[in-house]
Length: 48
Image 1 (cartoon, rainbow, N blue to C red):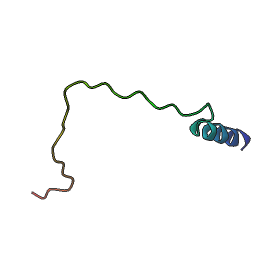
Image 2 (tube, rainbow, N blue to C red; image 1 turned 60 degrees about the vertical axis):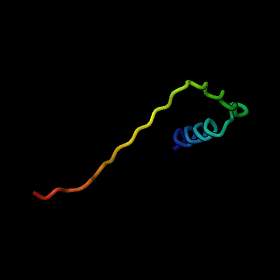
Image 3 (tube, rainbow, N blue to C red; image 1 turned 45 degrees about the horizontal axis):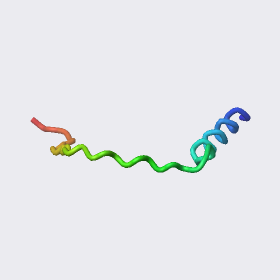
Image 4 (spheres, rainbow, N blue to C red; image 1 turned 180 degrees about the vertical axis):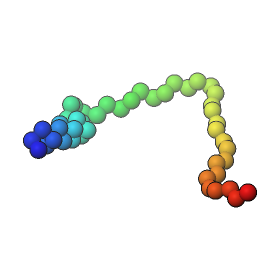
């Protein structure tokens, strides 16, 4: 039980920014093109 508790505490500390202040990522550079994905999907059972 103790190792599980220790791993849980470590995971929570790692996830909450305990390693320092959050750093905002650099803005993405403009590339001059864009990508668009379209389509349809169906899920079900077909009766023949």
